[in-house]
Length: 317
Ligand SMILES: [Zn+2]
Ligand SMILES: [Zn+2]
Image 1 (cartoon, rainbow, N blue to C red):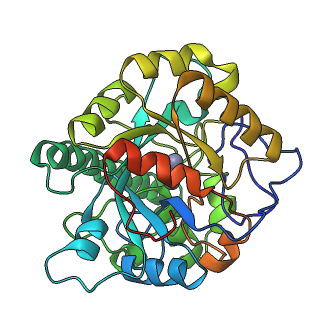
Image 2: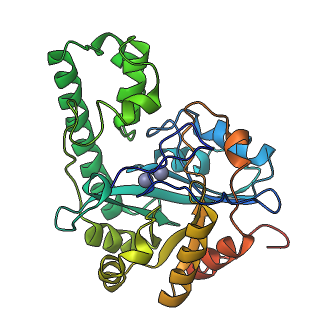
């Protein structure tokens, strides 16, 4: 199956199949977004700027779920951090490698860890291993591009790759655009960097069951992210539930309305906490633009906080 791509977005949807049903029409601006990325992984905004942009359009509960790093969360919640204009949920997204499961997009399942403890040392050690695997893969892709006559070396310095930051293909895609080798990040992600294409290097890292166990051990809710095939792949979901999966991303911005309805039914049936979010990265759209097609019911945040044993600090939620 090919990666889905929403006509409403400038970014690859990460959904497992193309969406061609009617779009979700938000009944009112969403106050909840449980899936976003910052510049500490492959997003484009600084964590504080992402928070400001989300708060400005009415978001009151925001999960910063950078890939394999809690660096941005720690910056926003640390001892010297300014008070935030919204309720922040500490989170990560772990791109797990699942070679034994057939017909997965890119051979991966993405697990969100919502509400994990940013001070959990064992969890941080696992994330550090993931980041090292990402760094190695990044270097291999850069080398491959050099051998293909598309060097990006002169631009690599522009990437923020300090301690705690994690690298991914969208950053390589931006380098290719900066170096004049590609017209857009989208075209590159779905072209030369896509699975099986000339500059594709397989990912190394943790499997989905281990990621789920690690998120649980760090006090978070493990959520299966943007897996549109879930209603048709119950065997896969059942295996993950047996490993401790606790949530299903139902209100994903790039899902069409029929997919959201099927995912909601599945979450109810399997007693999984429904979650949802924009998966905002920032290529080609502002947060406000992404937010226009996002709808995550308040109930998703209420169920999440209930699981985490944490009262929502937001009045009327
Ligand atoms: Zn993902
Ligand atoms: Zn994501």
